Structure formats: C-alpha cells, structure tokens
View 1 (cartoon, rainbow, N blue to C red):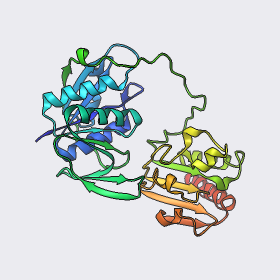
View 2 (view 1 turned 45 degrees about the vertical axis):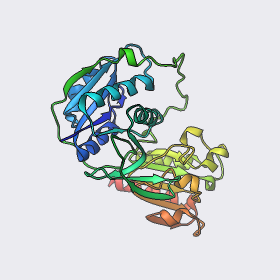
View 3 (view 1 turned 120 degrees about the vertical axis):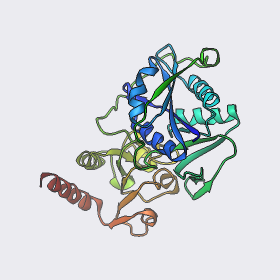
View 4 (view 1 turned 180 degrees about the vertical axis):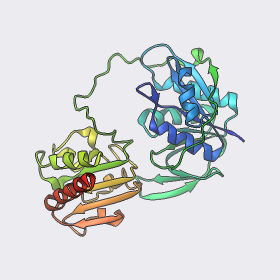
Length: 316
C-alpha cells in the first residue's frame, strides 16, 4: 500500500481537528503518514498515531516562528523517503501555499478546493468560485488541498512510528517574522473555518446594533459567527468574519444564512456546506436556490422564535 502524507497542523500544542480529517482522507488513498514541523515535533507522534498516522515524519526546527519554507522542505524530504503517492494539506492560506510550492518542487499535480475523494485517486473539486463541481485525477504525486468537513469518519489508530528528518540545509526562510499582533476581537466561539455550525448575517440585519441578534443565535447554537461581504462593508461586523470568495471559505455541517441574498461571491465560500438553511423575506433571493431549507419571512420575527425554540429544546 502506497503512503499518503499529511501536513499536520498544530493548535495549542496538539493536532488540529483538520489534521484528524486529513488523516482519515489519507486512509482512503493509502497508508496515512503525518509530517510535523516545529520544536519537539516528535513528541506529537503518540497523538498523531491515535488519529491514524502509521508513521510520523518529524522535522525539528528551532525558533518560535515557523513559515512555509520549512514545511515545504519537510514534505519534500518525507515524499522522497516514503515514495508517497499523494500529499494532503489543509485549506488555510499557509497550507495552500505549502501545497502549491511542494507540487512545483516535486513535479506533482496540485489540486485545490477538494471536497471529496475516492480510493482510486479521483477527487471532487469546486472550480471557478464554486460555479462548477468537477472530478479530476493528476499525474505523478497528487498534492491535495482538502476543505474541512469534506470527509466523514476516522482512521484506525496506528503506531505513529517516528522518522526524523534533517532539513536544516533546505529550510532557511526568505522571510522573517518580526512581530505578531493578536486580534482584539478574539472570541470564545469556534473558529469560522473549522466550525461544525456557522451562522451568518447579511445586509438584511440593517445595522451594527441589530447584528447582535446573530451573536445571540450563534451563542445559542454554539456556532461560529460569519457575515456576508455586504454586511462587512456596511460596518456591521469585522472583516475577519466575512464568508465568501474574498473572505473565509467554510464547509460546516450546518450553515444558517440570515438576511443574505446570495451573491455569487458569498455562495462560492459556503455552498459546499452539508446543510444550508436560509432566512430571508425575499422569496426570489438566489440563496434559496442552494438552500436545503428556506424560511421566507421577517428575520426579526423568525430568528427570535428560532432562538427560543433552541433554548426550549436544550432545557427540555
């Protein structure tokens, strides 16, 4: 069975939920192996083994700031060592950059916006801003950028045997991070890109003050909070909440669009969601064309009732 590499993403010292999904995807294609880069990288092997990694390629890198360069070097070294048939990375900006650069370095086929794959290496992708869904295969080593919430299940636990990589001569970054600013809008809500449930508000909310209704709905459901570009441009919320082609691409199990008409720019960033619920007073809004469930009505009447129903269900 050929080996399939996964670039492990680390959050707060542990493998991210996206890495577990990527190892599950790797198990569909072959033998899942993880590549982890950072200080004391090999210490993460037991956790990655539990997620399905039979082998953990560990690249120890000194310094607090890890850029894409050492990740590409580690993936390339692991690909050579393992003779991997495919490499899976996430859909974050850094992961997509690492995947694209790796494909160029090893002469592989880079496949972005993948939302499904089969054991024969055929992948399903969204193309042209989500206007088309295509199936494709690539020559040579496939480098796949997988959207979150695209693969269900989990890979069986494995040994997580550690193989250390020496990338010191091949990972000197061309850029140095001088400082990092933490966003002042930090929230206890789930990450927008990784959340199982996303609640998004649009221009139909009418004002920044009324957008607070979306916050209440999101908190009631334990959801991440998003917005359309129109809502962001109108100043209802911060730019980092924007869902769409020029914002964050999401693929949650449940996406609730409130007061959002459904411009193509917004649809491109959320239409791969498993279940879409739309609430809008205009029955002709394009959002209803892709919604699984639609409510035509005044959001200021519908959403409060929705919130109360959820609370009653929780308390019941």
